[in-house]
Image (spheres, rainbow, N blue to C red):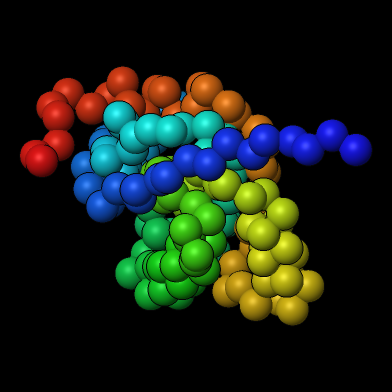
Length: 158
């Protein structure tokens, strides 16, 4: 039996640095919080999976933005979910967007099986305050993240 060499890579997780992006999409305001620290992060191949999760708001105000009551329900869930998905260094937070009665959370994932198992656990145990859907796909070159990084006009302070 032939032994395989496994490449060891030391990864230093960057300290999250946030920037706010705003734009119009289909005539509606989109507000995003982007982790700009990932713009020059390497090695990207360690976090080659793109996880996108969309939560549907139930109570919203004009322009599809969540009401204060809705924010009080959804925001703690999003914060807890972010902490759980990133546990053990398995994920990097990329962005969250609020647009058209939805909140979209995006992470870059190392081991998709861990993230998948956690999300399935939440769904099976109905441990979520609002309906959500997610999609995870391999994205070796971070193509799905490029647009966000192109919006960053200045470099983060080091």
